[in-house]
Length: 184
Image (cartoon, rainbow, N blue to C red):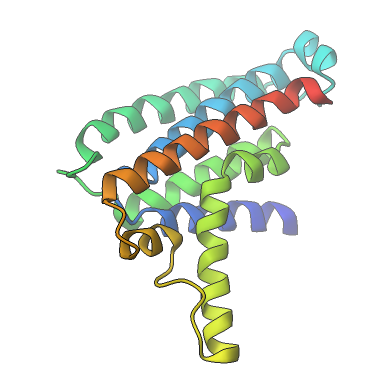
């Protein structure tokens, strides 16, 4: 119960912290949501679950519809949220989006894989935690600004470069997460 709470609340806040640049939070959410859809389908199919050595959870394959809707809506939103954004997500979008990712990960029993695939969200959150802890304990900052994407902006990286590089990192992490299907 406690782990479920931490995964859902943690992922919700992690996506919210990441939503600071145009398109930075939505495409990683789309990619992680799509990958969780693959996990949901595999977990819901007894043959795939046995072959991949993942827990078979009857009925959870239906979550692929939810994940597909998340991916479709996210891509539609991304059209208007890429740099320079015409529409912004804000807390109203980021918090439930992160909670949805966490809830799907809990339902398909892939919380650790969510941690891997959502590495950009994790790094952004850890950067905030480290910055606050360092400033409270030593009075010094580790980063120029937290979350981490603002640190790179203050170092002189243009916003599109930060965004696309974080997207590339997410693609790699999602592929690593999907590779865990066969590593077991």
